[in-house]
Length: 144
Image 1 (cartoon, rainbow, N blue to C red):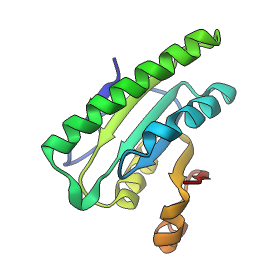
Image 2 (image 1 turned 45 degrees about the horizontal axis):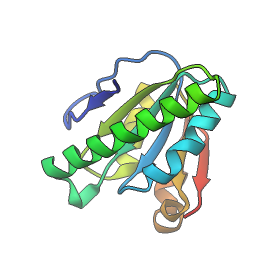
Image 3 (image 1 turned 90 degrees about the horizontal axis):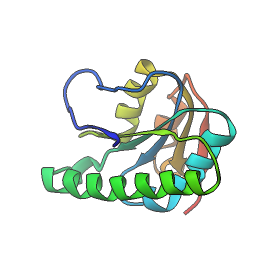
């Protein structure tokens, strides 16, 4: 079962030690992108995958529940994908937070050992300065 973090105040809670890859999402694109992130983690021996979900102005408890349900389904699909390919299991974590994605990502970068951040190319188009100001990890931009 993935660890689900929805604490919107203070430090991010997490239960998995070691490096992680982070998939950032403001909507449901994570459903199409998670497999690519899992393949990266598997290939680079990164044991943890964090889905950072920040719907920004759309944040609500109902949305968090919907995202949690969808994320759990995707995590199970990825576990099955890894098992079918004889790969080792990964730890999955969902972090749902209020506020702007780049602000929450900055906090996560400061708190965790992040090997790579996966973010949609749209983020680079919409907020290039915010991305440029984030330092301390590598970025991989995913297409639509």
